[in-house]
Image 1 (cartoon, one colour):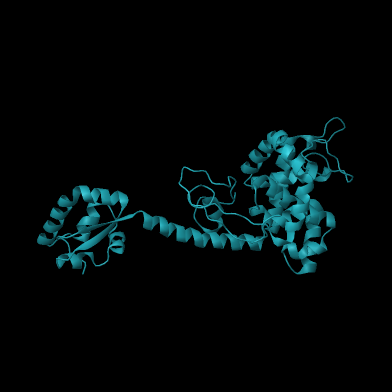
Image 2: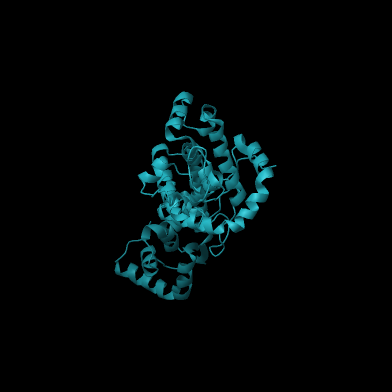
Length: 334
């Protein structure tokens, strides 16, 4: 059975060890703001988040994978070339590459798949949608059967839906049932949470979303950003943001070295020689000038690289500190 507790397992690792989840949030722009937390946590800079499944879907996933795991396992090999196309297109369009698993449900990665409603190809595009994005449909050839061309259209549709709905589970539901039907379900349920509106959606659509989650779990080994509701996503990012802040503090602390000194060192001269901001130096070394001017021992705290310089040049730094105080060019930090 699949694990139920919704927890996050932190795995510390060095920068040269690849993270467990290699596919991060495409909506990260490199800044360490809240929306960019997923990107940070998938680069090997910190920790790798684990996404447990929502309890509402665990039983379905168990049953589905029990029946389909053999076929999905073989698909990992023969479907690799198609997943490569999907990942390239989705990355170019700023979409989560895990959305590629939607095609597994839509068509089983079959280019000649045709639904009873007339949807065709690996992404099961309807004629009007295909033509809206410029695909050619003639008696001789249907571009919906092209993996590359149909994926470009699917990416545009998925992006449109996300811009409108702001929730990946609702996007997947809308891809199957239509945005209008999803919005009517939202209105009836007075909620935008998929798990609260699902009873107002067709059974096929409910299962479509759950199959996507199951296939994501199978290929990725866990849930992910596209298997969360918008509310769950925000909670997850806030949790990771807090953990990121704590981790940042731990990393900073771990990089600090301590050395006992005595003598007429001056914070201005020391920080200047070490190319440190005076405020940064004083934050690490409160009461530095006062205690040393009174002849007391002091445990100076410096980043590792700065400590190496200080140890090597401490006599020169001491001489400059004394000269600065004698000349009156610096005031001691009392």
